[in-house]
Amino acid sequence: MKEKCVFCEKTKNLIKAHIIPKGLHKQLYSSGENSKIRVGASKRRMKRSPSGIWDKHILCSECDNSFSLWEKYGIEFLSSPVDKNKIICGPHGDKIAYSVYNLDCVKLQLFFLSLLWKASITKREEYATVSLGPYENIIKDIFLSENVNELKSFSILFRRAIKSPKIHLFPAFFRWEEINFYHLYLGDFEIRIKVDKQKLPKKFEVFSLKPQLPLVIFLSDFSGSNLEATIKKILQ
Image (cartoon, rainbow, N blue to C red; front, side):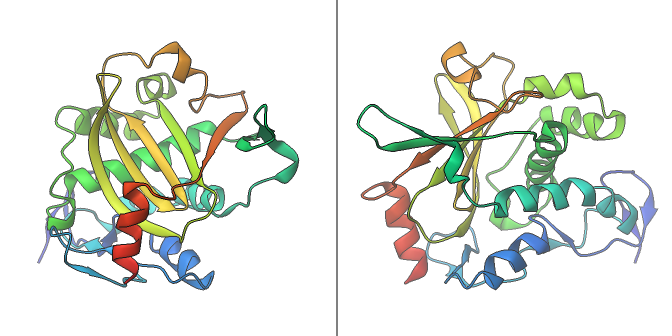
């Protein structure tokens, strides 16, 4: 049965489109991690899901494939090890961050926005809390026009766990510094995406993903945090 593709808006045969790329799940499982993603709207419904979650009512094959270059680049980024030569230490010698150079910031930003956009357009209950509202069409227009200037509105910040099992958690809305964000946990990364007209405060803007500048990724020990408790519950 043919349905309307959300991206091209043409009536076609739609495919099983993965919200988070299947390749990212494969990479996670092939690494030997005891990994899971949360499945279901309830926190109690959790299971291993090596192939991820897909929706057969949102995209045609051509449109789904249009994200592939961004996805390939994003997976390579999330799979890359910490460069020990680029680590930034605090005054007491503790590792607080590391720098990444020569990134294709446009591809990377489009990759993370595509994950958030697909999470918003799907009707799967796992992503019921993701609703981009007017930003859904704004992001879609960016994909279609490839107007990189519009990407400036969606600042992205990164944090990486020093010691933590790799895990995928569904995007969640939160407010930080009175600004609307969604955060994603992919592997050992936390990604914060600003979805708001307000500008990021200058003290944080310097650490956001920007063209032609090194990206600073903070290193964090999640021991004793709510995130660690969540991870332990999922891995039980």
